[in-house]
Length: 438
Image 1 (tube, rainbow, N blue to C red):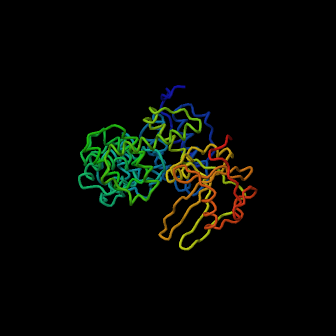
Image 2 (tube, one colour; image 1 turned 90 degrees about the vertical axis):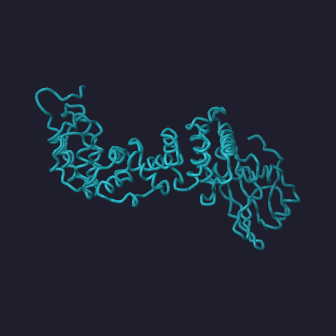
Image 3 (cartoon, rainbow, N blue to C red; image 1 turned 180 degrees about the vertical axis):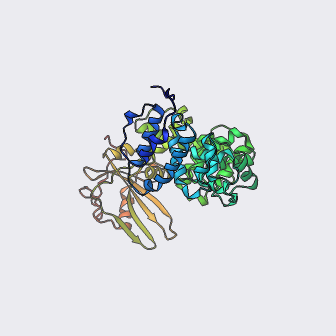
């Protein structure tokens, strides 16, 4: 059906939409204009819900629809206008002028300026009214703050403190197609000497979404800009983001680190993740690791979790100033950390754990300084409660003498029920040194 205005006169957009805002019955089949019908349905999806939020929106939204319907044909030409109207209505408390005094008939941006602005702002901030997401967000708050004379220094800075030059670039030159936090990162990079293209790579990367305020990102940008290298940027950023998630971000910095070392570390990380993915049935080549979508999928594996083995009581023993605990590993991230600390291949066992073919436990030592060390990883058959293998650092298999010593120190009582080896009350049955077929 044609979305053009039908012949025979103007369409009464406001008369069609106002009853919907009032939650009165309406029939989409009676709206012949396709674009107006689309906008009516968008309004209907919002105001069919009777709650505090829609009641507060009803009055300002009606006023906006009435004014726009009388002075423009926007409801019959723009299929994306309703979300903008709802955002304007939600910010009713920040209006500095009433919509009825608007004299424009031009684009919606003139109404936005009329409602909120006492001072001009850059297109970046005007564009925030058209950005999807929650009704109230940092971009629209920033527009109201600056357009009504607020100081730029009072704005939240989600990427860390901006220098004077970066703040000037952010306020005057930042591209309008970026979000506020992305624009701040763009300004930060350009102030350090990056080109527009490189600054956009930084702004739209993962560094702008996770632990964005930490100074490590500025250190990294300085290293890249100074070196002039552009290769493996995405992989290095993903690697650093994962490092920040795995350690205390305040204690992590890049002093003394070269881009070559970062590149090698990133390749090693995603090479390990590729092995995990292959073990879970994913077909991934080394070249695929340069695809950000593949890397995101591999990183997503670390969030994989499964249910713990039933019927295992918690274990904790204090021996002098140290404490021993047994912890079941129930996520890919835990397996990866265990494998990194003890240097064995347990990180590739997630599919066995998820399918119920094995359960993995870590004996951990908590010393008097608060540090935690993995001592040994134990592989248990959930069906028979038999220990199939136990591995220390480097993949070495603990001998009976070692277990007797650990059992004597830790004082295990009962161990895993149903096992066949009784070593001083431990109740462990040691299997072969390598994993049995499952």
